[in-house]
Length: 160
Image (tube, rainbow, N blue to C red; front, top):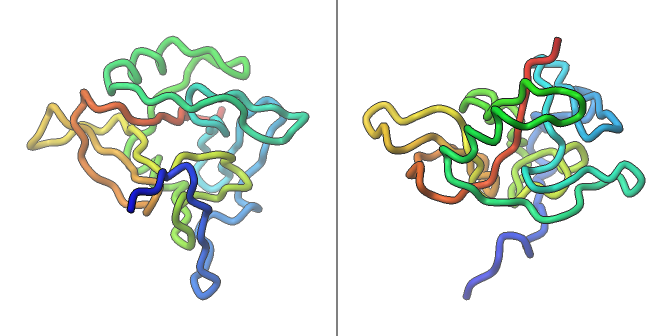
């Protein structure tokens, strides 16, 4: 039987400790969130979506794109008054994985409507340079994906 990941409801396990508590994040009305633990500022929504502050949620459809396109988009995106966004490296992206939850494995009150699918990192494979690391937000695990695959994207910048 096949079920779409978008139809899945997040499952969190009470017996596990949360790894991304709400208190760690400062949410902003412009659709960004500051991770006070890492000093990273994240787009709250996946690329292709827009933060609706009145509704307090992401609207629109998240887009899947190839790795090279993701690099180009990150370099040219101006969002929330900033133009220094980038694709997170594998360590940055795994820093927002919520180990207590799956489908998606993220703090969904901070990162609304995250797809329970793979998201790009800017970290290329060492032995497979035509692949890049991705984080699978259905489980929180990382894996190598062909750079020609269509994956989701969440942008990040260094907070200053």
